[in-house]
Image (cartoon, rainbow, N blue to C red; front, side, top):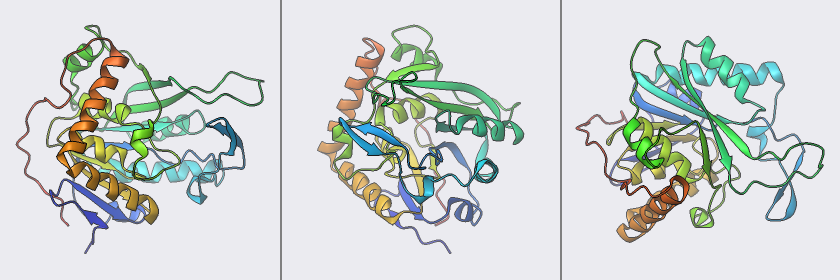
Length: 294
């Protein structure tokens, strides 16, 4: 019997502590969408710049490379488990850099996913490179794939077009990195911004959808999901990150704070996509009533 680390009073935000592969194999449930920000295998004693200061790139033991073969086998194993937890018409989004995204693409193809897009997220405020011997790294990549090549997936084309000023949204997204107000409950070394996850969720789910994040960290996926009327399960092995996730959820239980965050997301959407007047919280209603088995 699984005991959640945390379940919100509204039952729309659940956290599990442990290994995502073991936990996902221990219960039966199908999700509408999965977002995964897996280890990039980058914590190998390199250096970077943060707030003008030279810092180590090491994030933790969980991000350390175990070698090409071991890293590949790990990616294929968790992706295989996630495939089993997707509905037939479900989709998965996986973020990465050039260090891991090609391995992820290979795994997705071998597991019979159909890759739909490779999104290039161009950061408006990237850190400079210190060596001055190559181009500054200013982008991350997000692969979007559906479970079954022959089963149609959900894509809110009209909304994405509207958010893009009336023209088709392209696979290059110019969006800012994490904002200071998104770290009010603590810091996570690889935290994603709400504007990126909000766009992903709006593009590929309807209200009431169940969303899984197997490497939830500080649960940006879950916060965006709840702000947009979706439901969420997050898994992580690090208890300190789960405490941040819990605090972030409890922060937006307050109606005033929730409205504040929604207004900031609306502002970011307009800044990044022109003068769209779309209200990000208005969307197709869902009658989903299914609940997690714990």
